[in-house]
Structure formats: structure tokens, C-alpha cells
Image (cartoon, rainbow, N blue to C red; front, side, top):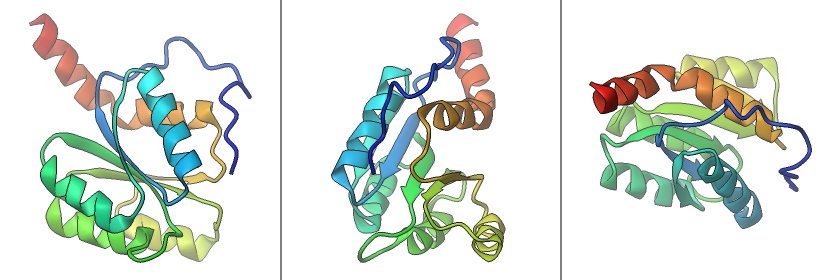
Length: 149
């Protein structure tokens, strides 16, 4: 998958607040481009190439990680297995899925598991950033209040 970071204008107001996001994708180019994009917009990232590696990072950064952005089709522990493991180890972490496979049944399963958003793959940078801003505003406000207060 090729993600062209200049394919659409992104509003300058779309910025993160230092939230820690785990990017999980077995394709290095996608993982790096998504991670670099998020960091350019004031998010912190960790990157994992597999579900197993993602789970290790989640346990290591438990309590700090706000969101996991994961691919579904990966060798070994796939995205679905990872979502189940996340629920067991830290149900407070939000999950956003990137998937090229999208059916109503697939969406229903993921929604039932608590997935907050299912984004098409390849995902447009603006859509990804808008989704994160929408999902993380409460935490962003808490950080802002703590910093200013």
C-alpha cells in the first residue's frame, strides 16, 4: 500500500496532544508512514510489526497507551486475535482498525468487540487524523487542563 502524505490538504488545527498511539502493521512501509504522519501531527507512537510484538508493547506501556491502530490481516497473531488480547490486558485502550476487507458482518464483529472505528485501507491521512482528533478529545482536554491549571 502506498500512502501519499500530500494527497489531500490537512487542516492545521488537526493536531494531537502527545497521546501515545501504537501502530500495528506487518508491512513496514505502511507502519512507518502512518507512524511518521502521526508524529508530524503531535502524537507519540510506538510501532509493531505483529500482534505479538504489539501485545508486548501494550504490557510494557500499560496505562500510557491511549489507542491502538491495527491492521487486521497479519501473520501469526492477526488483528482479531490482538483485539481479544487487548480486551483481556487493558480494556481501556481504544482500538481503530485499518482494513481493506470490509463487509457488514466484519463490521458487526469488530463493533461488538468494542472497536471504535474501521478505516478503509489504504487510509487517507486526513481521515485518519480527523478520526483520532474525534476519539481522543477527552484525554486531550484533561492534558490541557492539567498543563494550564
